[in-house]
Image (tube, rainbow, N blue to C red; front, side):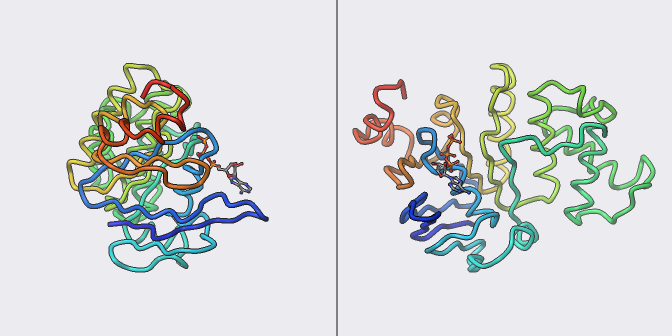
Length: 244
Ligand SMILES: Nc1ncnc2c1ncn2[C@@H]1O[C@H](COP(=O)(O)OP(=O)(O)OP(=O)(O)O)[C@@H](O)[C@H]1O
């Protein structure tokens, strides 16, 4: 679905990413881990089109998108969430999702569309998908941190993406919400979406991912099924004895 071939990114004289090749197939979840500053977010930015790589190639659904904008990639079926919140705090959960649905072009645009319309049905089904069926009218600013993360996920799903990129979707959420988000993201993968997820919660990544990629100093240190990766001596060294 999406692949990076020999991707490099230099800023000034610094090699932030060097020769990184990874692919994610339909219905597959690739976990991307690595110590702070390893280049994980930079890699997600390159996949999504926020950053142009200095070298290498990105293909999305077998088409070369290396030179394509983030907007074009979004139209081709790519969605992403960000490390920082992208919600409109003064709008309700439902209104936030409505904007995402309308921006995605999966419903005709009308900010005054009445409740009971097709769009409202889509909004309810997206909120149900992220376990927030009763929160349509709750203001985003009144949601718990975990529910804000779920709402961001609902918004990313509004475009019915083929590829979903998640940058630390569980950062700062409670243990209970980590479990909920893990379940939801697993269901998204099982529905056939190609998911690439950067996440620091190691037990979540190792339990959920089909394959795990380890970035270290901008290079791909290891990639494989979770048990292979945790057994890799170079990976253990990179984490300096942290529990994997
Ligand atoms: N726009 C930029 N200009 C210069 N350096 C950058 C830029 N963006 C990232 N970097 C540097 O690239 C390196 C990798 O950063 P990145 O945010 O991709 O790492 P990360 O693995 O996502 O880290 P974390 O786990 O802390 O989020 C860091 O040293 C960072 O300072």
